[in-house]
Image 1 (tube, helix red, strand yellow):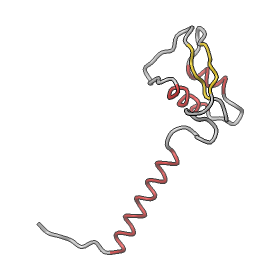
Image 2 (image 1 turned 180 degrees about the vertical axis):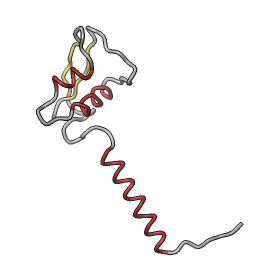
Image 3 (image 1 turned 90 degrees about the vertical axis):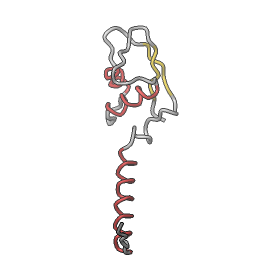
Length: 98
């Protein structure tokens, strides 16, 4: 078995790559926490016939909101996965801006 020394320059490069990857991961992870939070305030919405998580998110979205982030927040708040269908009469928690 061969051992190989790692020089200081290599350690710095590895450290920079790790920091960059961590930053990139944390910047893109989850919902925009500054505007909507799974831990924050909710309004309850009763699902009507023909409603989808997307349509409910669209009605909750502001002019500058990304509907995709709201869809993710609704799914997280209600423990829904991508395969779950919502049904008329069901009540969903919809995160509101803080």
